[in-house]
Image (cartoon, rainbow, N blue to C red; front, top):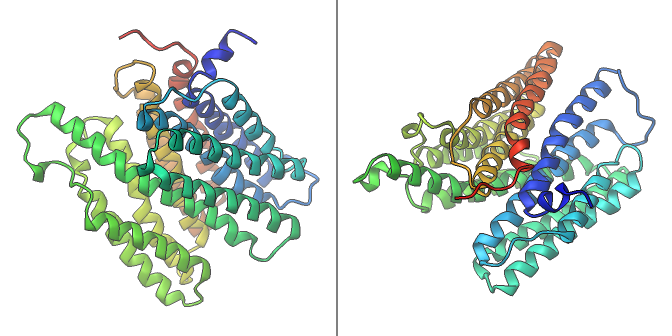
Length: 384
């Protein structure tokens, strides 16, 4: 085994965040080529569903595993998950990316990926009796069920295939809602207290409370209504209420007080796409805008931006480096935000120029992220 292999598989964030970077760059370049007829794939799989699934479950799925398997050691006090379990997980992820070429292999590997991730997290949490985080196991079980259902509906060409894919995307957003609600106010509070002592409670992010619970419940109800309700007016009302509650929740985290530190405000910016995406999605369901605009506001605006925000902090913190922003990181988050705006605009205006711009901005953003953080992921931790 090469010398770099033990380092890559010494922490989940190293290997899995590397896969995130590879997927972000290679997939979008390939998708752009397919969409513009520059590359033809002879397969029965609809490339549009393949693209949506690859970004919801391939791109975001690797980030979720990297975050959870790194964080669980902190939650439980147990050693980091490393070595062969990570090798097996990464190999199954790679095989699952073969959906356009070998759909059955991709299906088996994709289902195994979520099963194995669930098994690893169950071992860590149950062994330490960490019941507080058992809800994570429930979410991973839903991911496993939805992944199995996706491949079944894809194979059978079921009419509910699109809604299954949307369910996977929505579940990723719900997970960001839950994890973001824990880490964003905590990191913001820590940063504010380091800048100035003696701050009052009103100057710090509000603790978890009724607003957070209501915003989370509304988000889940809205997503369920989007999937099953035939009453577009009701869905739009739910979208407006949910968007307001999510925006109110975000406002209570005092993001406007940390505009001098990109490493902090970028998390708030990423979360801010949730109320925007929900409102656009509701307008899309009601027929006023394209549904694609709302989906891409959530996937590019929320999911991709939050992955960059959290992955950058994890890479710095777990390798002993200062938690400081870098111009390349700031550029990355701005470029991804512009990509989201362009992609939403492309859906609303049916603009090929904006669609091309969104792809170019995405690739430029993740190139900036890669240039800054791939060397960190592949380098030993710095001594304290």
